[in-house]
Length: 351
Image 1 (cartoon, rainbow, N blue to C red):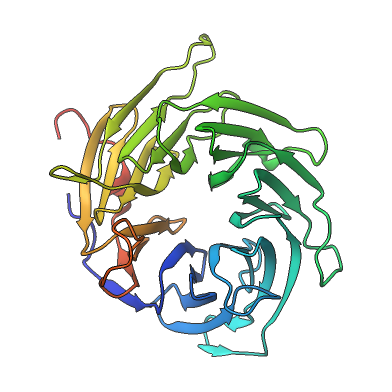
Image 2 (image 1 turned 60 degrees about the vertical axis):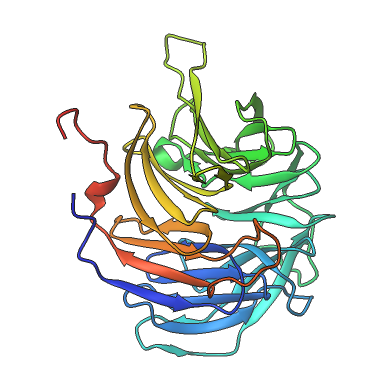
């Protein structure tokens, strides 16, 4: 199958890319040089770069999230533990910055803040202190306040899934992969009455990324590890309490094993995309237990992936993730591609 019309833009960055995110009009990246860079999604035109931390100059930014209802507002998780709100103030049509940037600290973890996500008026963060927190950006404080809720999960949190919004938008779920090699499935429907379920993962090495299948009371998840393996824990049926799961090797070159750095779930298809330290991007059918296709191979690590809501714009952060230590490596960049949404769908048995 043709993957698309072949159009792509190369967006150059100056340091290792920790995350790439796509909204309706913007593509945003976070980097280890402490910058958050904003590009126009339509054509990849650079709009602005701003400091990702409100209090620490050039503090590495480990993750970034867009506010879905107003993409001028961005949220960051930083190595100093801070969770920050940024005002990009970009005019995505006029290609100019309308006013000066502002930022403030929403709160902080006692160790590095690893992930951040926007969810229905709340900012969700995870940290290397083992906490997952919900922050209310409406709180009027510039120095950071207390979270509206938090859960202590394990010694460290390593990965946060994209939230799954339940039917009717009256609730949501997230998954957090932790240092105890467990995935914590959290119902964040309310601010006080929340449920946390701890689920062991088949993988035995450090978990690097996690994604939830979809809207279901007993949903499944996919996780990737530093050992070049992916575990698929399938959603449980309504008639069975038994969990069906499997794991497989991937992102390897000959005898060299590379980590699975990033996952992206296509929930309507039960397919997912993985990117690894070997530089490859692969699409998998979780239910059929097979690879659909290898979408691309790059000259260095793939650190993050993002897909537009219409599934026609696909971003790949091609950025060395130091699997082999401090060595010379290709330039850090994001590849923004036009793709055919059908490439993410399962293939029929005859195809």
